[in-house]
Length: 190
Image 1 (cartoon, rainbow, N blue to C red):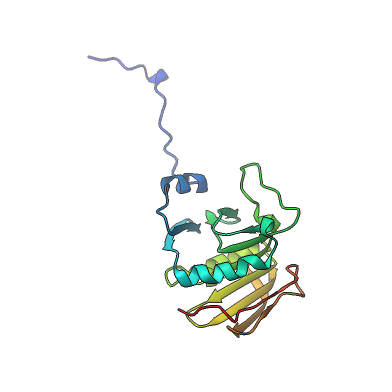
Image 2 (cartoon, rainbow, N blue to C red):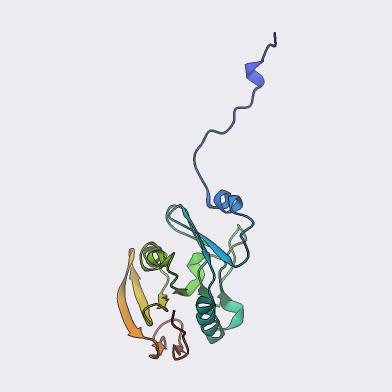
């Protein structure tokens, strides 16, 4: 018979509390050609499509390269929100946090290109989180409808100003912190 000294047994952590770091670790390595995001605690893995990437590439050169990110994890406020936004433009004085990741507080601009599998997030939960995080300019580019949707003036969990126009119409951001105009003439449709 074995005698167990219960004073010396380390109890396993029975907490069910998940963290973003823990969840992203479970998902590594991410298959090549896929993007992983956690939106309100739900994991989304979506393939990168040609149309998607061609639009992202057109958005990237419009901002100083050292202030641009694409598909890089940034943690946002709310329950378990770790986004890998399609395009993020950071403020000139942006710094990484103590965790080594870029801070949502330093974001000036986010653009998301709609995918069929995750479009509801971009139009819904992520838009609300970006507004809550006070991201000043949020652009949704939808290759399925051939439209873009510019969201500005965040207040609470919504944007007070929304402008939606067709591809071919430039996105005028000159009156925003971004300070430039984006051409949409060459945006491909899906």
